[in-house]
Every structure is written in C-alpha cells, then in structure tokens.
Image 1 (cartoon, rainbow, N blue to C red):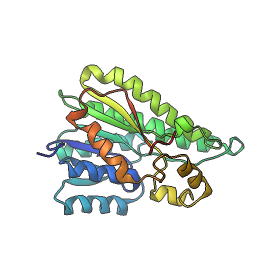
Image 2: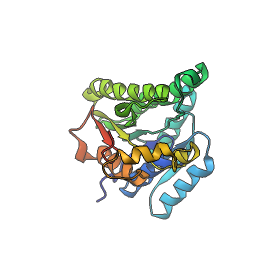
Image 3: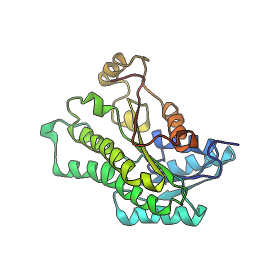
Image 4: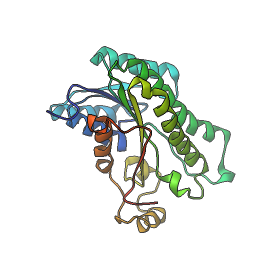
Length: 249
C-alpha cells in the first residue's frame, strides 16, 4: 500500500516549481491532491493532467491565499470533491529581493499578505476540515532565515515569521493531533528563480560555492521530505524545521 493511500492533500501555489513537485510527489504515494493556483490555470491543469496520467487523483482549484474569501472557497471545493482533508502544504509565496532603500509599503504588504497571512488563513480553514484523526500541516519556509543575505530584508522577515508560526501552531494544534512542520529549502531551480534572474547569475554561483553538495536544488529534492512529513512515519514529528539545502548554511 502507498504511504499516503486514502489521504487528501491541498497544496497551495502548486501550478509550478516546488509546489508542483510536492503535489506530484504526494499523488505518487496515493494522496488525492488539490492543486491550488492564483494565476496560472494552465500550469495547474498540466500538473493535474500529469498526476492523472500516472493513475492519481487531482483537481485544480483557483484561489489567492491572501484573500480570506478565496481561501474559504479552496477548502469548500476540497470538501465537495473529496469529503475530507488530511494534509495541507502551505507553499504559495512571493519573493523580490530588495535593498532597504528599495522597500515600499506595497512590497511589504504583498510579501506578508501572501507569505504569512495566506499561510495562516489556509491553516485556519484546514484545521476546520481535518477529522478526529488530526492532520499534517507542512509550511514551506526558506533557508534564507539562516543565511540572512543583504538585500533580502522583507522576504527574510516573512520566512522568519513562518519559522515562528510553525513552532507556535505546533503547540496550539497538537492537542487536536494536528502536526505542523516547516521545510526550508535552499536555492532551488524553478520557473520563479529563472524569472527572477537567480539561475545562472553570480548570486547563484556564490550560493553553490557555499553548498557542500555543490549544486542548486531541484523540486524533486524537496518533494520526498514533504511526503515523509505528511506520512504516518512522521507521527512523532511536529514543531520542527527541516532545512533541505544541500548543506547550505
């Protein structure tokens, strides 16, 4: 039997990159997956098609996690389609590396509304849908909270908040058998890091030089860790942050 057979998962921001990799990884282990997207319907539908082609179950559901009404809709559609929820992966996020003098009110709120508020709203709704047997919440943080590079003050602040939220909610939701953990990836090659000009840049080369395993990560380096945290194998793991970075510190 597959490790996640009979379970249902919501993965936010799953139309591409790490989220898509995790959605496919969960589905490969037997979970029915809700592939959430905010803007790329085409990307989400490709992920769903890939899962179904391999015999899995998945649906694409639109919703911006920074908007409470959208979040409620995501989980209402999850309940309608699958009747239950066991796993939430809070992957949706935005990033724009800016120096202090580039900080604006709009950029601050854009980052915090998605990376922190969105995570909280999704977890709030998921907690209502988890059954008596509890569930697993997996936040996607970032190894940037250990690196603290210059010109990343807003993004690093949001991911530091994710670290704190993970520890707090593990204590708050533990009595309900809901485990809360965070995966903190290093530099990962995705559509987003390509679009941001990270891949192939001097910035990437500097971080590869600091990475003991000597390369940039891939989404399928992250997905197996999410599968573990979602599974019963991690039943005694909560409030933890797993840095998945090839040793980058």
